[in-house]
Length: 115
Image 1: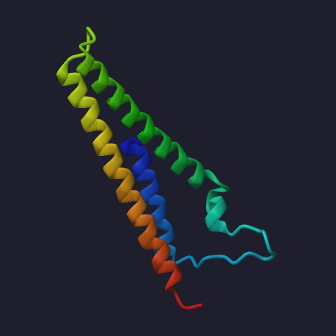
Image 2 (image 1 turned 180 degrees about the horizontal axis):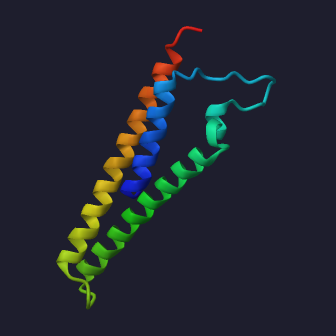
Image 3 (image 1 turned 90 degrees about the vertical axis):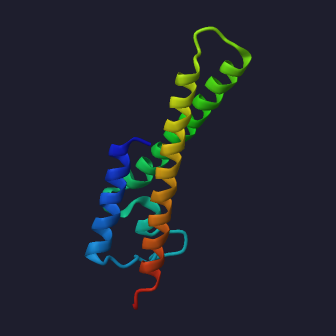
């Protein structure tokens, strides 16, 4: 997940928190609320979150395969490259975990709001 995507997610979380939006309730059985579909932007939040998770996964897989190639002695793969990709994957995972933690905190705050 790039820094720009993380900042966009955090900005959306802050916007929702500052407006004090209350969760919407389904009107009929099987109808999803705003939280499941993205609410404000018609699913773009969920889509952006999925793309971010996929990007972090791809980064981790790339770092792992590069590390395996280095361990096997494949020509053209040097230690600096392996370390750089590993650190990129680590930073992106930590950023994703932070976004998830903030989303959980916002969800808990919304659920604790009086109706």
